[in-house]
Length: 356
Image (cartoon, rainbow, N blue to C red):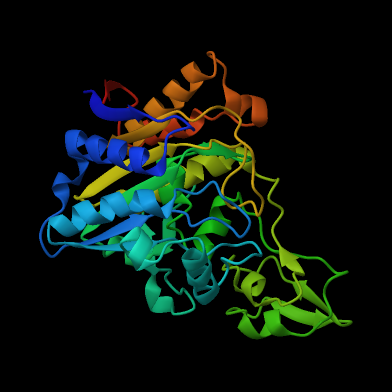
């Protein structure tokens, strides 16, 4: 059975007010927000952008959603999870501060920013899914507890998944640090000995005593390490990190299995992809990446697989029938995530595209 995906074209030259107007029409005609009821707490899962990055979905556009949600008598919360890697988004307090600096204030975006703090273990949830790679998924309880879950994704390239859209925004984006690390094909933290001074900060936070200080350097027992990544956040010298280039083959399917863990049992969901300022890398990069293709538009659907498939297809056509993500990341098969998500029953790749 086909899903419906609604699409409104947007050009780089369009003023913010015009894009807001187009987005409002898209939401009206797609009716993806019909699932919102009075007194609901609607959580918009999005990406606030790393410091120095400008590719993230702009807060003025999020304001359109927040206003329409408020008109239904519901409240809006904007949220993302903390990261594994070093930067301004590794701790909740710093992450929320950066979001405000990027314009996601209640006055501009219409919603309050909440970044769940997983140092409080009550904020983490283990979800049994018994899939090919992931048996239990470690996600943030905050997203499961939402009355309405809305994915607002910036559609762009990614060095390990080819592209990132709704599926990645949810599967990787709603996972705890332990869950994020589990998706990177068994990659565990690595100690960069030249940066390590043996201060013991990592040793103190390790919940399973997998870290010890030997000859004034941190040493990780890989067999004991559970991949919680607490040491990465705790290290003040940037001596802990992950080898991001390894394990890309299985990571895509692990990510999709995590998407399933988040969405299973959720009845009120919506998925919106912004194919604007499409870059080769994701918004986690602390730099202002250039466009690799002119702006395409905004997509909306109640099906996360269809919305990603449709966005991919229209971008492909816009690029002159070229896979710009394959060109940017030759080792990645961007379509693998779509096929696996359909196989797991998250949605369908067959859709009707309705242009607004």
